[in-house]
Image (cartoon, rainbow over all chains, first blue to last red; front, side):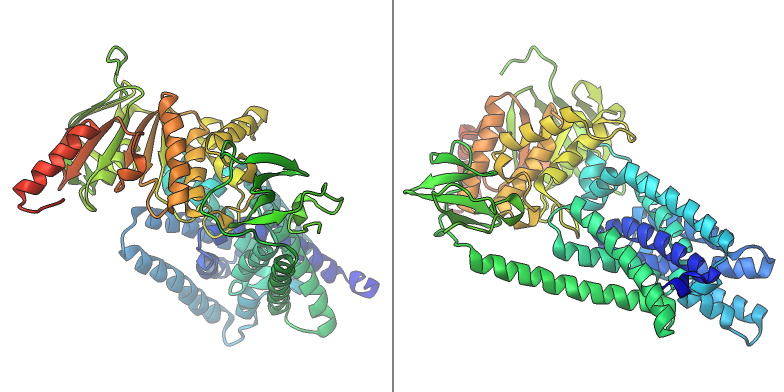
Length: 338
Length: 246
């Protein structure tokens, strides 16, 4: 480990991976919520055209990619807001036009040697310079601050756009803001895991987080934690295993997703075997429903023909009349003292 | 019903539609404060276009529409109108708790940089109590039944304390036990003086809640009156259509 940290380029690589692992899932959870998991992929294609412009004009490709991706992100939302069926085609033209133009231009300038192109498409984290790391950290800080401030609004618009509009929220502005945040994240992650794989780091840690959490708040935190574990863990693994960093990061994220899915299934199975369902009844217990309410630890049981019913997910559990034991907490409401 | 206060809604010869094409036109309708109005009509009759027009979701094409004494186009404070859409998923593709969904009802009422305060949390708690879901505040919304999900949406509309609530099919696809609880919630709101405009197919589920019925068919208002009069209207319609029952 210390041998790896002694290398300057590895220190830069790990710092870059850290900021990317933090920012990508923070933005990505809203894409998962909007069921637009692949939009990041399309924006990555557009960013390649920006890289190409940077290569031609001999300016820093990060900045030209940023401009292209931000313009592309705003255009996506404007096309979507018009709601025409031709919008889908317009997005396809933009995405594939972007990547095609990028490939043609970069190949033309670099000649037959395509190492540069591969670096942008699949990531070239070890070429990250100290100046790059500083720029990424600044951009990532902007993303984190904006997402933190607008979190609830982005959640409301992504969850129910029609209601958000009816309640008077600036839906188009918030959608464009999310699109621009996505674009910035893509450019930051471009060097670390590549334009073709970037969407994975925005989506997969969040998909894994959904398996193990029960609230949006918890899922957001888990997404960030799993994102950082995937990106930093992937870079470390790629150093020792001598593999491509971008692909390693994504494969690790998928491995974490599978583990989370199995853990979620196991937890549901264990919870299912450890608690007793009450008999089905069409009556819904609630305040003033006619059954006596009894406080039981952190929740309320309803006295139903001499036994106690507690609401749990889509059914009622049988809770015993014994005082709740210490293990009976909100997180484990499945645990029923027998 | 007192007519001294200015009406909550006042439409004269109004038309609403999409992309410049009217779906419903020549609507004359006045709703007084505290009235509970059921908007009935077959699918495609234009009843949803009418109520979504009041919310700014469909286009107001012609005629005069006053909402809470203000012309519709100049109504900037949209939190005065509550909206309960017809929804099956409440949070898109992610998990969210009942509290998290209901809290979004308060966002339009405060500046973008201000986080939720204690008063906001209290308002959420009260809205959940009003719909009888206070004991399920921390449940994942995906684990709730259809009727409970509707009540989450009603709480989300109630939390900003609107003066009028517009509901789209609140009882559709809800089992009978939940329908009873839902009707009880609407009844309590109605008795508390909340003005409501309820688009529905199922008048039976709202018996005793509704003060007045507006029927819409093929883009026109075809009946406007009390529930007793509506039964006679249907019977007349059925006779003229030459059928035994409507």
